[in-house]
Image (cartoon, rainbow, N blue to C red; front, side, top):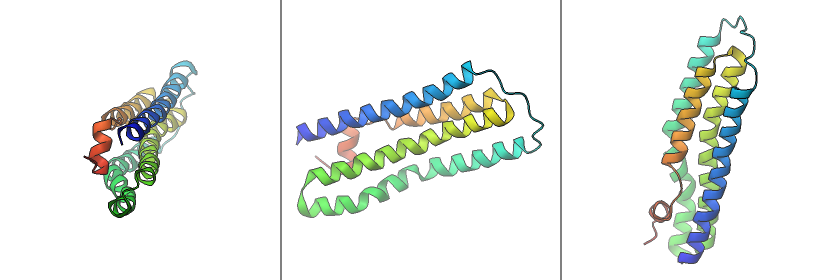
Length: 149
C-alpha cells in the first residue's frame, strides 16, 4: 500500500506546486505589468469588501467541502478495501481545494486591474499561498484524511 500511496502523494504535490506556480505568475503580472491607470471606480471599496466576504466564505467552507467530497468514496473503501478509487477521489478533491485557494489570488488580481491597488493583490495572494502551504499534501496528512493506518 505504501507504493500507490507514495505515488499518489508525489503526483498530488506536483499538481499543487503547479497551482502555486500559477499564483506566482499572477504575482509576476502585477510586478511587471505597468500599473493600470486609476479608474474613478466609486465602487472599489464595495468590490473589495464583497471579495473579502467571498474569500472568507471560501476559506470557511474549504475543509467541510473537502470532507463531504470524500465521504462517499470513504464509505465505498470501507466495504471494498479498493484503494485506487479512493485515491482518485482524494486527488480530485485536493485539486479542487487548491483551485479554490488560487481563486483568492485571482480575486486580488481582479482588484488590481480594476483599481490599480497592488497592495490588495498582495494581501489576497498571501492568503492564498499561506492556505496552500498549510494544506500541502504529505503522506501523513493523506493517511489521516483517508483513515489509513
